[in-house]
Image 1: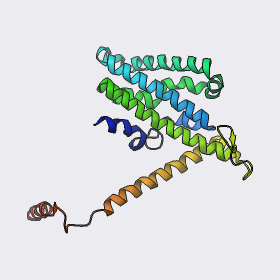
Image 2: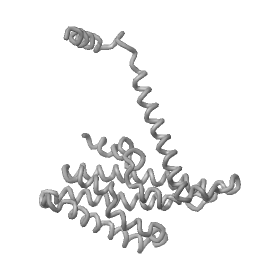
Image 3: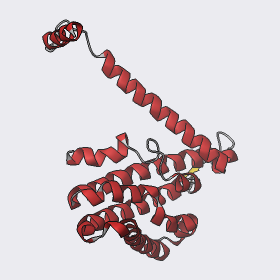
Image 4: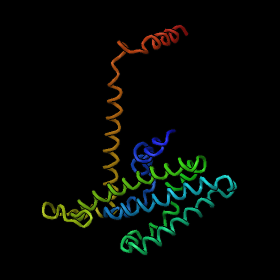
Length: 226
């Protein structure tokens, strides 16, 4: 797999939230505001990239019997660093994320990439995989946070947008609103994906003029004979 594909894989094809349905706990819990979703996404991206790099570097020295515990210790170290940085420089975001910041340690996205990718690939690709998956996760949380904040509070990053136009719908900042928003976004993405696939299929003009027409015909004849 090329470096570009590794990078884009987590953003589009295997988006952790909208495609793989991973990390649902922070996705639903902290996305009541756009800034919270963006903050959680970037914090997770930092941990994902750093842990992928370290795990890729030390994978040969970790016994298989204690592989997962070692991965968790490495991840927990970077989560602690993120927690200290947010507490020092962005205390409001640190308070808003609360317990879910510490739970990044056992986030299934990070553990999955450590096990599936970082432990089997080089440092460069592992870093790119972390960036791609992290940006995909950040994009999903930011999108959900933006939708819920605009419809539920009437603001976006604290800027009043719809308060003078429509009454904010408190449903969207409730747990039920989180599930509803996630379901709608996944449905939209599935529709767009299927539409793109169908367009590719329609693009085939049949056998006439196709450079592979003779090869297909010979394969069909062989199948009929058998």
